[in-house]
Amino acid sequence: MKSPLSPLCRSVSLAILAGLLLGACTSTKSLRSYQSESFSSETPYQYYSNRDAEGACEIGKRALLSQGYQIDDEKARSIRGEKFFRPRPDEATRLSITLVCLPSSLGAVIYASALETQFEMKSKGSNAGVSVSALGSVSLPWAIDKDTLVKVGEETVTAPDFYQRLFDLVKSLDS
Image (cartoon, rainbow, N blue to C red; front, top):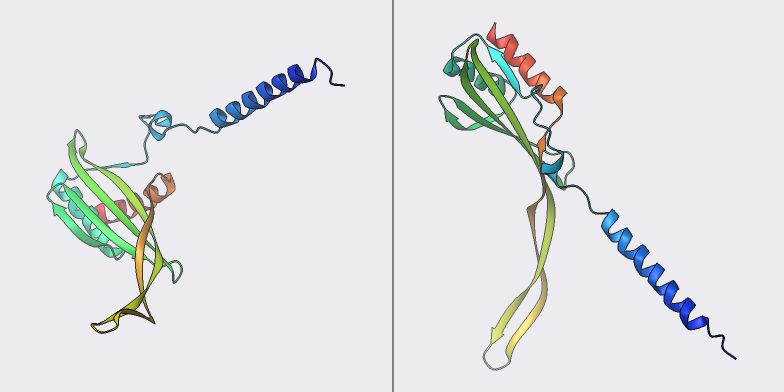
């Protein structure tokens, strides 16, 4: 004999379960990056120089070159340098640093921004195919492996100590 409450209990249990699942889905939603952006006036991304803007950028360029960066985009008031790293045989990292030099009441200010891009080695295998008119198409099991680097992530470097090290070098060359 069934009790009259069992369908009601089942309905309530299903409603509670659905509510918990829905709550779990909404609680795992993370904040978007722009929502946590503070736009603080205290920033590690700038360095003040007594030189004019072009002279300050020249010092920034020398700093990057002295550390093995390849300068790919150079203008009078902006420099972009890249350096590649190989942390493991199947991974590569590119560090791109952009310096923008603008006039200020003290001479010039150098703004720095770094972007780290991660790559992984991916293998792509394929079979060789031979077509013979009398027999049709035949696939032979000759494996052809092609390794390629695939971009797997990219992130702006936000570590203040990274920029402090860069600007310490610029300061030593600026004197």
